[in-house]
Length: 120
Length: 103
Image 1 (cartoon, rainbow over the protein chains, first blue to last red):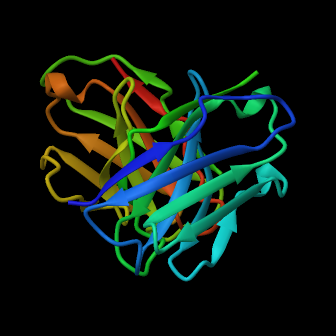
Image 2 (cartoon, rainbow over the protein chains, first blue to last red; image 1 turned 120 degrees about the vertical axis):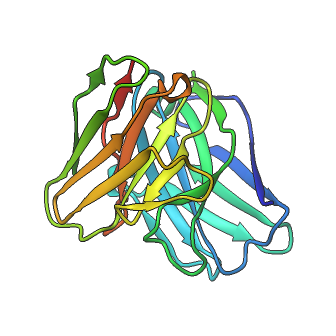
């Protein structure tokens, strides 16, 4: 079955760019929506944004235009960039696939294990 | 915006528990419930307010429409002690509730 694996630097300096990759195995990026979500230490979940396989995106306005999500079909990867970062961006970052193909309304059915990023 | 209650809940094995999620505006049935255990990613339990995700035990049920939703666990099992989140996908941002820790 499809599996997701997040990767990227575990430490980023303030004002720099956080870059993460979500590698998809056991399935294709095609036909699905893909989201990034983060969870600050001891806090709840924050939806960052999603991307459709066509490249159409939607972002959380709370991130004030600092975020960009892209897809690389040839590598079967989804990428997240967040800049500039502050200590408030310290969190575990998850990528997830929406449950039903071609729909973003039905919850997140497959999740990666998450990757911890500290801004310091 | 989603408001979950309670923020924490103490219960025992075999108990029936209910968690509530209230949306600040109508979201039809675009509401999902997740279970999260420490150090793990959330797991989808319920989508479309009341549809049980494949492989999830039938003791979990969801209900609601519009602004008021509930997740009920009919008979708590030891593995159910975790944190539960609701999420709306009616409109972006696809916000989450603040979570309910079941102890």
